[in-house]
Image (cartoon, rainbow, N blue to C red; front, side, top):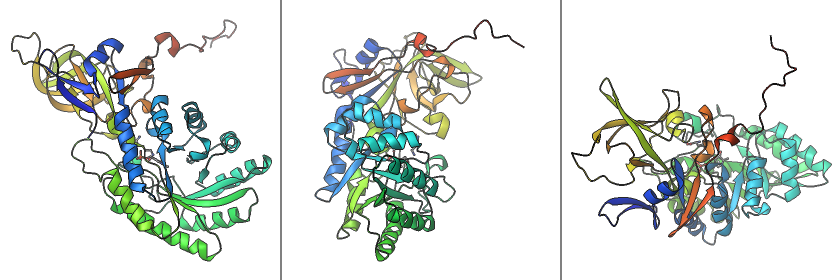
Length: 432
Ligand SMILES: Cc1ncc(COP(=O)(O)O)c(C=O)c1O
Ligand SMILES: N[C@@H](CCCC[NH3+])C(=O)O
């Protein structure tokens, strides 16, 4: 359940509300396309994870990559959870949003020395290290600063998470993590190095996973490794089982975060290991919508197209993964046969970008007329964060609602800002 529901407005029409805010009014006030997030949905999802942890020692580290809007991060910070970051940019965002350094885990396959330095300076909880080369680089940076870097090695358990190949991360053909063999050598190196402190082990097998079994399979493999390391005198204090829990976009039936986290906690009872989870999508996806407006309807040799003002640059998931996200009317039309131009058909919902792959949805049965508002659901994760300025399109504003209040957290970009800072060639540059 989320906080986007239809209510009957004063004119007797069914209109989509985001908590207690009328989505049509927000779109009118701030223009389209726009992203709208619900603070209450974000809060409920986080609380479900916290409730599942209960008294078990651990930390929920929200995966910032899913949605790094400052207000979204601020909700997480206020709820006291941690953050999983993958770049210095995300690190600075978390700090700007009020997050605490000692609750950040630094993941990612290609951390650069300057990013390591900054993370050591502020004192992140730990580094999830993904290769021997990175471990050596981290040791060098920490030594040069007279600091100790807390280290968790990310293992790649070669478990099939049954997800889209672009978002699977725990197979040996994926670039993420290291084999158990490499991990053994890395732990020995780290244990012997004065600038490194071995604290945990990390594992992430993919995203949009709709079953608990792959997580538990990976967990068994990681626990076996922990036992083996303990026998060699290397004792770990935490296990980080990544994110990856799927959400319902259409007909998927992923486990509830509470049940998924509870299954992991149950298996860990008695191990003495602290549990870290890095959920992104399952916290943010269904806490957001993308609102767009129908500009034109057209029919091309029997195929119906609704040209809307949002495009693949605003939401790339349909184009990139062929992902299916629900598209619903913001105001359910009063079906009036006399209304000029209204048509009911199976529409391809497409944007203005010059690519045939620019679509938000295909063959959606809808009754549409020029000016209608549509909402793309489940757009709170991997939506705005993956947006671009392709076709020199300004990126959409992001609005957070909380009850009957709303805040424009990020304004729509201005066209002039899209090329501010760029220069034409100086005249003295000769051509040809
Ligand atoms: C290391 C790591 N942690 C957390 C996440 C967040 O995953 P999700 O959004 O699927 O919960 C990802 C993305 O797949 C990841 O690679
Ligand atoms: N961007 C992906 C998820 C990537 C997960 C991060 N490793 C999506 O939209 O589904």
